[in-house]
Length: 177
Image 1 (cartoon, rainbow, N blue to C red):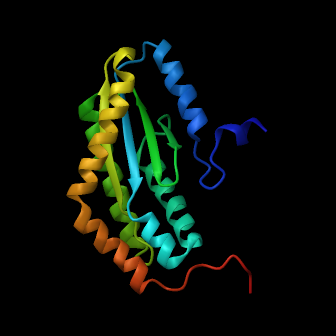
Image 2 (image 1 turned 180 degrees about the vertical axis):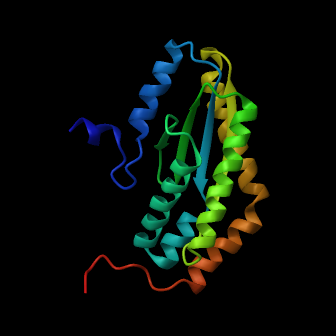
């Protein structure tokens, strides 16, 4: 029962409640620096509107896998909203956080090369807190950086989304044949 209270049922990632618990724990801890990364799955609304929620759910699951495979096993990956994720990178300075973003981009590119029917586009932002006093500000700055990345990648994301909405095969069915 405890598992379901701290995990997202769609992705198996930690959920917002667990993320909030970890942020409270970090406010009491001395394990700094801590970097926070915000990830947003680009174009989910358009995909849900044109291809249906089963395709949107599939992309959320795949984005979760890309994020998990792009970071270290002890990093905390949580789904905190419909298309929003956050990663807590413990004992990670800003340079290592930028390297983590590069690794996630490489993981996403490799995934998109393997499965071109439902490519993933993620906007990412990160910020680092060196003390617990800076943790909430780091979260705000990571979110701001993610939106800046989204604006910079808008054309690329639109190309990815249009590929799914126009040329993708029919949505996967939940019914067996």
